[in-house]
Image (tube, rainbow, N blue to C red; front, side):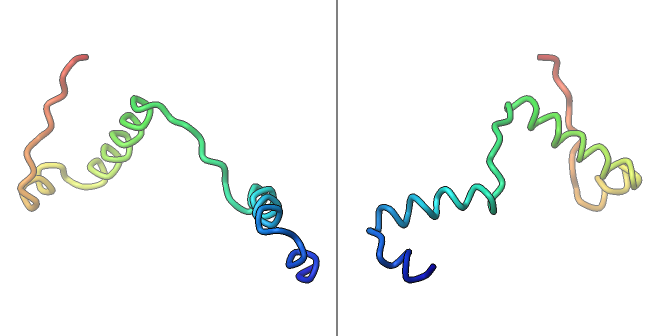
Length: 70
């Protein structure tokens, strides 16, 4: 198989590798900015709910986030 690939032109080899990569690499999926923000806020809320929020903010000198209506 190595010999067969070496006999191909560089352009043809790249085309074959590109086609084979779809079986090894996950395809990138688009996500809206709003969905990304919601996912990040959800993660932050879970992390903060596992510990005392005031203690976390005091230790790390973090100001509370004010939520605004959009």
